[in-house]
Image 1 (spheres, rainbow over the protein chains, first blue to last red):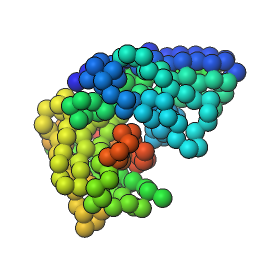
Image 2: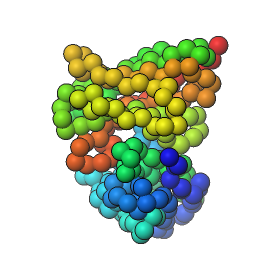
Image 3: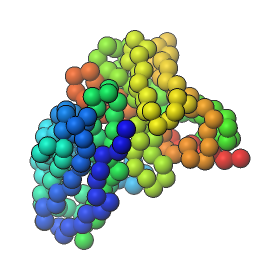
Length: 110
Length: 120
């Protein structure tokens, strides 16, 4: 199974909106709605930010939102804050009952 | 509050077997509601799913590990374990245990991570 494709890095200034992409195949992103996003700060475990493409767990800021079109999912952060600087990973359950992660995107807040 | 905690040797010799245990508190690994998974992260790299186990003992593994891995349950201790055979330096990573449910397909609880170094 191939990893989901994410850009290596994204940057933005405080207050801006930025969008991460996550591209997969019909066996994962396009075929199922079990796409989730995780935020990881250095030395910490990943934290769930979005699940089932668009849903936000309780406690996660409403500045985070998710969407999907065909085989590409997106995570948008609005009103960028310094604390958002982290690595972001997408993940999908697959039609083979396995899991796949993206390579991760490093967000830099300028 | 559900908590997961990885433990095991932090140093493993090449060609040996890596053995890690995840101790679960606040939930039962015998529950039919959840799956228990292992995920790893090579230094400075992304996340890689290793495999998962269900309370029934059913397992699924990442084909890229070429059947070197085995995940098992110890319900008496509320733990699940990972064994990875014939390790090389490429298996040096932070290993996480995590949980996902049968109705919500995302990892909601993670351990803090445990660094395993493969070196002679």
